[in-house]
Length: 368
Image (cartoon, rainbow, N blue to C red):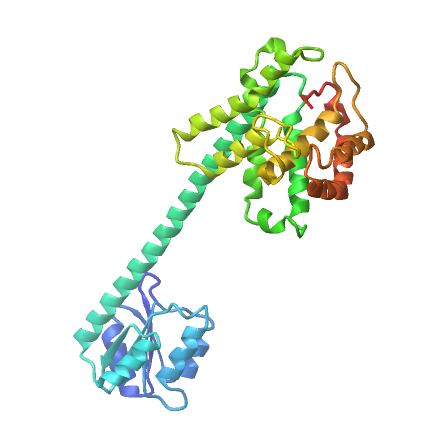
């Protein structure tokens, strides 16, 4: 057998047809002949041909019955089948094509015509496989490029977040910690009847990536204010509060030069609303209750919890239990009461994380 040649299985219960077919095709292809559909199915257990020539009218198992079995099996369904038949009526041909045959050749067949029909169909099958391989390779390239773009975006976000923290050395990795707390809260909401329908529509990873930018506007705050080792004056606090509007401006500028919207929309929501309060006393817009997007209400809990358990120049860090008491007391004022119930249910995970990362809280400051 020439491994460089295509392999064809010829199936016919008539010895004369098998002999003629073998003599016609043998100079050009590897030919295996068999006299029944059952023998074909047995041969296919160990060998896969490039094409099957299948007689329609055979005893015990007809060609129609045989092709039904071929097309029902994943390992044989894609092998092209040409029917050989002594009937030239349209109804028989339609039945065979409907069952998955690619062509119909009338017996007794003309050797030149048989060769040409086989040549054409093998060429088509070869082109189909080449197209599939091309599409698969193209998908691999697209996936690789997409992965590169995602890695670049994540690197950009991390670098930008680190740049903000480098300017405000009192944050003590605040961005990374609040991102972690947001992840815990999002997981909890997925199992909460009151919120799971809304959260199920979110891309969790996208929101967590966006959370890194919630304080990006601080990059425009003066160092003398941002790094002041003490309480801020009302004027200085107004300047600090302006980081929300600055952050929104940064996102809007990016939106003008890109078609990407989903990630930027989530980042803008988190930037604009994480300092709003449930009772309407927050900033910058004084939103109240459910006017505040759910993402912002979640970010407020993560943000404030981190502020409370972090040390400030004018106060020591609160314990986890003290932070829980303060946040609970502000339920219905600063925070969404429904979310506080969720938060209390998983606050132990916050405590476990803070205790295992206590050294990262030495100098952390946030404007709670």
